[in-house]
Image (cartoon, rainbow, N blue to C red; front, side, top):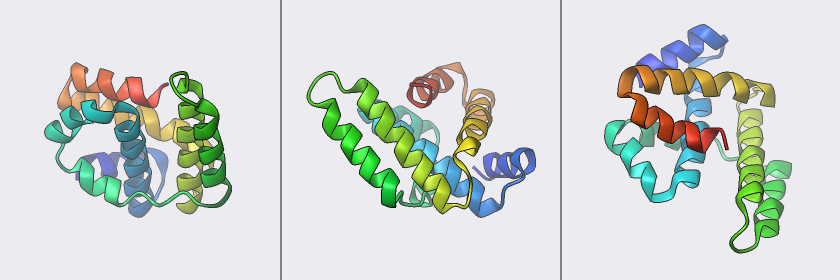
Length: 133
């Protein structure tokens, strides 16, 4: 994972802590979106759990928006609400890292490209399905 963090720092001009937290937030979202399928990611990339641990909590408005979006989803048709909750959570977490929400769109392709080059197409496709919903 140190290679991924180094790539994020170099390509995006963020600090190491911001890179770890941002990557952690993306992997946390993927874990939430993928459920049991995330075990494939965790097995191929055991260090991902450490990154998730470095993800900041989303607070304030983002947490409230995420909760409202989850409630609106109700049972069985909550894909859009789940996506909204995930995006609100990411925005709040990135804000806690002193990064604006526009950085999310910059982190995602770097993380996905790293996974594709290091772990292969199958893992890339799995993560891409979670992060591009």
